Image (tube, rainbow over all chains, first blue to last red; front, side, top):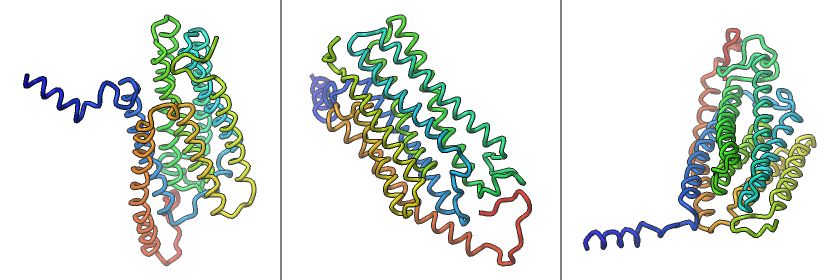
Length: 213
Length: 118
């Protein structure tokens, strides 16, 4: 009796019913995870703002360091992979398993392309003398105005984002294998999609705040 | 196959969003090539960045189709925390900049090779 009253009180005050956000518990938990992960990137971007605002020397011109068409290509690949992921979710909801699988596979290919581009960009910059601690003495990057704050911000921001792309790809590959075996419900593809779109969302901020501004 | 299953958004939503995102990205890159006043350029880029974020969150992540309280929890949680963090960090960064400026040696001597002085 007492236990029943306690449960009723809990449900009235804190329970929020079966679905407080009108969403399944899986989706609610995924959103909570995404919010916390977004706060991680928010902290990193604020750290980048701190490095940039506190530097006594002017921030280097990114167009002299990066190939902007190449960065645009990376953005295009990620946006396209998000669209194919969305199509996969719709196909899964409609019960079209083959189309869902095809779109998940296209998304994986897009993610691999993006990661390859990022690896190339890292390799290129490291070859030019960029290190996490700053540019190497005597490297061309110093002439371009690159300082330690810039290399730290670059490696940390793109590195954290890249690690999210890698984990997103692992999730997508597992989803694709399970979908091909008919073991992933539509909601499983939707959860994988939510994470992938989040990776795209973070890139929008890094692209604008680090590469363009 | 109809696109009326529960929870299924039409395919065209994703591809229209993709097209708009692409146009905005090209516009942002093009804005860099024009010699616009710095303040105008910054505002333009920040505005379009937010438009892109809203489109990805709303259409790709389906927040537009979820309950309003979920969308509110997600967007306000991230935005308000980020703004508070930035608001606290900015005066500190100015302080560090000022401190490094006042403590810099006035001899004009170059630092040792490979050592970066901010």
